[in-house]
Length: 253
Length: 253
Image 1 (cartoon, rainbow over the protein chains, first blue to last red):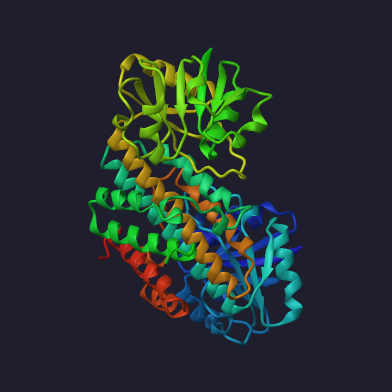
Image 2: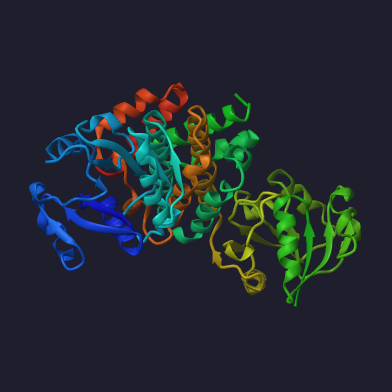
């Protein structure tokens, strides 16, 4: 049994609380947040507090707070030589106060409060300053059904950057398609199976091998016609830069 | 029962042949291709030919050939006043020879020869020059389990353009992430669940609502750090243009 004190009440903290609560091998001893009201509705399922001086003993203290709050919160913890972890993709493990043993427990996924999420599909990236804590972090990931990967800070920061490409930027391309088709009264539902299939395809095939379309074929006629169709100058520039990128990848530039 | 003569042997033709063959309500009377060898392995399941003068009677002739071949093939057909359809996202319905009744049967999906595809997930965009043929095209889509949408040529061309954004460009973002993470010896598998979840999220939520990340939050510190991390100048430019686009969509520019 691993005992956890959870700190923070954002999307990651809330999803972690739910995942931990479902496991028979993890007990959330306490949930801390500096604003009590954000977690008060959970008072019947765990001990909740907004007072750091009241923190209970636990095997691990997980700080699922915003990047800018991690360093200060680690300083404010009223104990030493216990195991603390943050959940950020970009904050260095060394930004936490070294009075405690430090770790990172970074779930690489997109979290929305509303969207239901199958946590067992979330890969956990693990980092530790003391090797003897590795087993506990791996256990924590396994008890909530997650694959885990041991990576260093530079790799984690690179993953965080890569995630912006495959998540935020991809989603913005969906947004642009939504706008373009809306303008011609086209039901966005028509594009949804294609969006899903594009993501499924690279689960077993490299993105390089999966590529198709006018840029990959260097089909200048279609590219010219598409550029004529786009009215928004920003979207035209995005079409051009990504078309050039595909051409370069596939040796046409 | 709808009888079909299929023309062409590319990815779309091959996937259509398989889907039609599975249906009890569709019979593929004949399969034509100008190169016999590409379809010769199907000679035991349907009549095959490379000779247009040998084309049999059917309810509909589906030309699943490259965009540039559609107009000429429609001229070369040795009959008139029958129903013909092309499967292209971008060729106008009026580019086909008007000696026949014309239609479009455009499956909006990404087709690879290798990748298995659940055809029932493919939306079919339908267009006709003679309204009385609409029922037959709708029936054809329904018999292979597909949703269908009646759209005009301008809408179809807009969908084709939108598909480039959500499919080819998105796939290139996956490719860039693959390259960036490979360079730091990171297993690309770690990013796959995020890729899938990003696509799943917009099945029930608008891309606008689904957006997260540093650009959406206008988190200048993270954006600056990411730009420092990217070594490839092309990828830096893509990061900048898509970050600016997200900011504009969410009112920070």
